[in-house]
Length: 237
Image 1 (cartoon, helix red, strand yellow):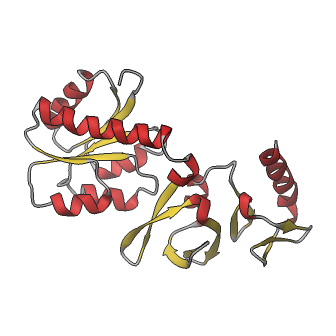
Image 2 (tube, helix red, strand yellow):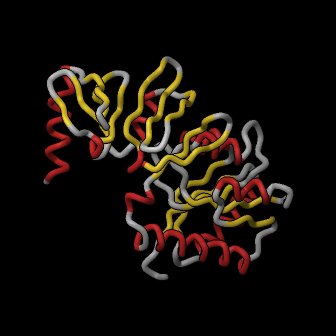
């Protein structure tokens, strides 16, 4: 396992609990602490600029819980919940948690949870094709919905809402285009118009005014045409 190094964040409103987890992380050869946060809001802002593979996450925190934080995170790292109560265990696995550890945390239980995270990381990087593993979570109808990026055709702005059009269905979420534009890989997705972000792999035809995806025409802004040509050319290299 020596070749694996997971970048970790610790989120807990108790400084003593954070310190205990940080010590366990520092004692593990495959983990590295890159961030510590004492609440969900601080975590959400911090993760905008910090790349993390694994979060050790408390659930009961002031203002926003650990679950609230995950509801607001579009791109979720692996999660190991660390909490003083067992009553949240069932709900935790609705969030695809790697594991659920009850406080106080002992080293053996901690290492067992970490081994699961390492194995999942290996599967993601060396197992299934990467395109099948690329996804984001979006909140629709009060539930978190997994959207695989290779199935996403385009995103359309509808006022205060954003419409997702995938190969299987269409749904609407309360969000802004700007928030999703930052989350999507720039080599695969392009904003072609103030109201449209498209999956470049799904573009079938284009001219000076429109692009075509699955026989549907979408408007192409005049100043975005050169960006589109450049992006499509780069994909063919």
